[in-house]
Image (cartoon, rainbow, N blue to C red; front, side, top):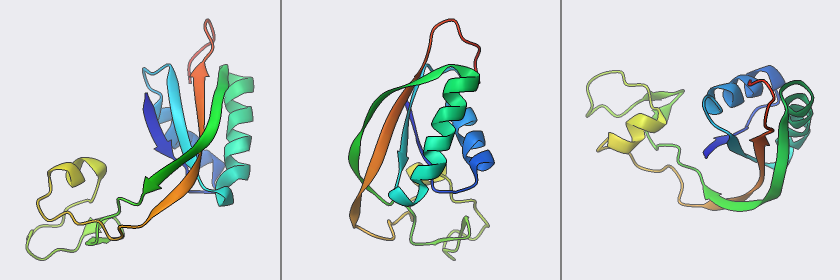
Amino acid sequence: MNKVVIATSDAERALSIIRKAVAGQDELEIHYVNKYAPTVIYLLDVLRENFGWIERERGFATTENTRCLFNQLGVCSNKKIGIELRCTSGVKKTCKYYKRASEATFEVNTVTIEKAGGIRGL
């Protein structure tokens, strides 16, 4: 099961994030903070009415911010690397200079959705 974080009020952008995450999947876990709850509620309605995705479970999760200390507008600012490198989740896994910007954890809302059988995909 894939997990996505919705941290935007732009419903079109959030739907694009979800579309990429559900490719070939039958379920998805969406994480969001209260600030973006109206966007997520709207998206759940769109996904249910137009694509047959149904809400299975709601809850809370404790998570951490994995933003790198050297991430400046999506690009690594560490001079030791020597090249301009996009700071993505894949790069974070292999970068020997990766360092979390904050050790703090916080609580987020979660909702798990699943594809209803026999309905066209997203």
